[in-house]
Image (cartoon, rainbow, N blue to C red; front, side):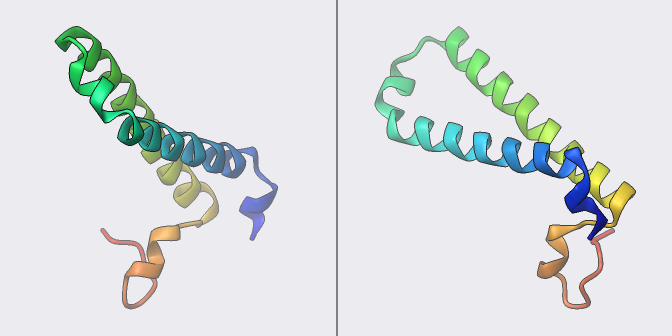
Length: 82
């Protein structure tokens, strides 16, 4: 439970919240999003790709440094998926 004392954990939680808010806003405003030109769509999806990649990197860091893996609840033996 040492990871609760680390800023990585709280940055990861904040990034999770921001990603959820961004996805909800895209879903709520899907009519406006569909009307955007292709360059604007590329910008939106590029930023989303960077955010998702950074979030994945946070999972890797938390797992490697502190042994924290929230995805372990989905495996039968509670181990990480290799």
